[in-house]
Length: 70
Picture 1 (cartoon, one colour):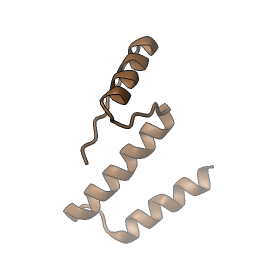
Picture 2: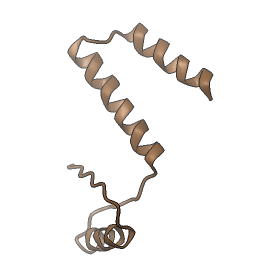
Picture 3: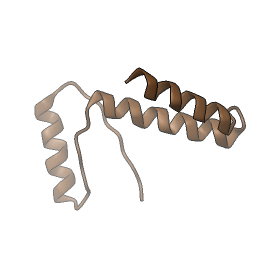
Picture 4: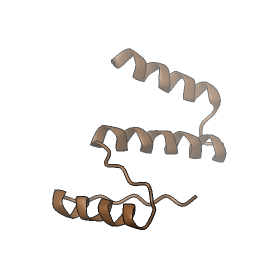
């Protein structure tokens, strides 16, 4: 599976890309800025754990701090 992320400012062009993706049998979904930020955080945490720059306890502490802010 390949993932492609595109970001733009034109709603009409975004809809055009989604329509094209559907015609090419790709799954396409518009996401909010908040969802994009969450995806970025998940990716950064996974990379940090894999590289050893972050340990599991730090991850848990960070995630707990996010829960407290909501």
